[in-house]
Image 1: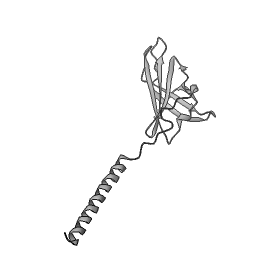
Image 2 (image 1 turned 180 degrees about the vertical axis):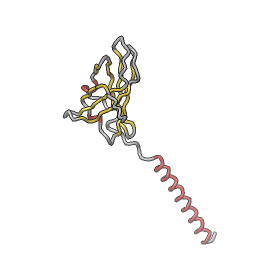
Image 3 (image 1 turned 60 degrees about the horizontal axis):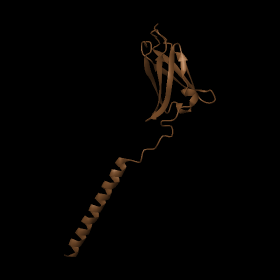
Length: 151
């Protein structure tokens, strides 16, 4: 082997090593960094917000708040405690922090009617950049009033 062949071999070996290194770096970048854990994910809900609420024959229970992507998800169960069909399609859910400052106002959709003894889940989504509802310590439930703006 002459010097020209040795140079070509060294260049090929260096090129192969660089290609392998580039592939490894690309694979690591595609895989990404380990997912950052959200401190508020699956947060235990403050006892006062998780307390059951009775409102016009409906019982709201099992309140939960958890993080999912860029949003917080608020859920709670609602049960018709009466012997009558109830027609309250939506409720307003207001969340307050420890200073009793409003954090968020959500609309919970129950459905057109809820039969006696029926149980449903109310779910509301809150973007994290709108409000940190994990700071909520109190909730209120009110009837949602639909305003018709037909002129």
